[in-house]
Image (cartoon, rainbow, N blue to C red):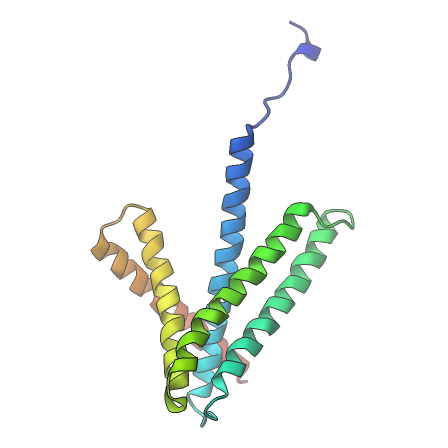
Length: 175
């Protein structure tokens, strides 16, 4: 056996595909949680002012679109920076996944906002943001094979931490 006959191991197509799917799922969940926490902060900022009924939907979509576009800009420029001026196919796909995740959050938050009376839109939007964060935390714990009780407590802990992050974001932005 000589050096030329030894070839490096080639990862199987299934392994590569699985890794890519995991990466894309992580990108989607990262964007979804980021948008949700930022929406929670924006909604918190409105708790101290009299919100104009019927305007919460605009806040939800305006915040989401603004965050998604800013993230898309940074992600694509950074991707080109590390890829010698080119944007890798995987980064192009990840960009689309990120935008879809942001839109999904805005859509979920929009549903109760459209149904609730105008005076309760802000409250219901906050509830949906909290539910998204708590359910994701619950899912994380269940995926780690925790009991329903432990998963519920973990979900509440994740929600508490996200609320602290949103409050800090709001406090720092108001200076």
